[in-house]
Every structure is written in C-alpha cells, then in structure tokens.
Length: 192
Image (cartoon, rainbow, N blue to C red; front, side, top):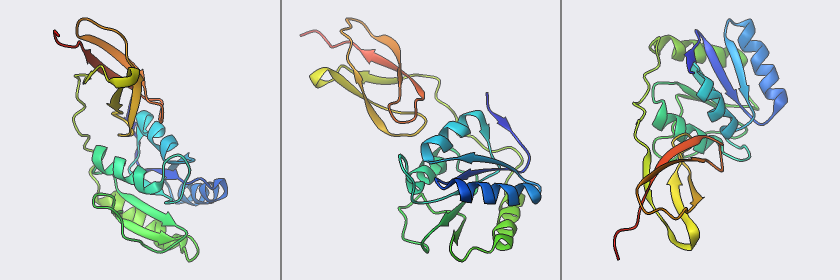
C-alpha cells in the first residue's frame, strides 16, 4: 500500500558511501531519507511509498538514472527530481530532464539542500498520481512460444511463455526486470 510521508527523499545511487553521506545530511536537515541502490531498486521503493523528491545518480547498473528518471516522469510527473552525477549536465532525451543537476565532484551540500527545500516547497502536499488502469494489458499468443508484455512498473518490454488457450484468459506475469506483477489477458487465436 502506498503512503506519503512529509519531507521524504528517495536517494538512488549505486555508491553506498554517497547514499550514506547524503542520507545523514538530509536527516540532519529534517528530511526522511530512503535509499535505493539503482533504478530498479528505486522503482521497488516507489511501490511502498512515494517521496516528496528524488535524488538520483546517472551511471548505475541494471537501470541507469536516465531510464529511471524517464519512468518517474511518465508515472509520477509531479515528483521533483535532482540529478547528482560524476559529470556535468549532458543532453538528455525529452521527458527525462531533471529539476536540478549537481556534479558530485564540486557538490556543495548547502546548495543541494536549498534546491531540495525549494522543490519540495513548490510540490503539492499530495503527489498527483496518474490513473492506474484496472484492466489488464492485452496480448495475443506470439511466435516461438512467447508473447511480449510491457511492464506497468518499469515500462520495459519482457517476454512471457505462451500457454495454449482457446478462449480469452486472464493471467499474471512477473516482470523479468523489476519483479512487478503484471496482469494481462491472452486472447485466443481466431478461427482458422
């Protein structure tokens, strides 16, 4: 069940030392800090509780910060995002632009905290969530024994083994990337 917590921040970085350092500073400044080791872990944390802001690294294993921010922007557009990276701002794909960008090497924690307070202060108390579709995704039996599904959590496409069905049948698949449960309907093949 999702809950919302006042002044909570999700830190997404594969470097545990950076996460711990920032977590301590955020908590000293009155924020509740939650940590995730990469984008996939960050998405799992978002299933439990939506933060008031996200601070994310760019270079991470399993799911890069760019992909993570893209998913956050699509699913939770009102959550502010700060990028904390080892390199300066780079050109990002449309829809993945952060609200602020800081370089790790020249990071001034006070500037980061000011930006964070500013962004959280401008964000509504209740995060506006996109409507979750209650209807399962539809798919047809695919070729070579597999069908393709798009995960509702990480938005990645993954394959599911076909079952032989002769009627439309509802099922659930586990995303191979983020382990989310994805409901779907397998439509039976039409008459030959």
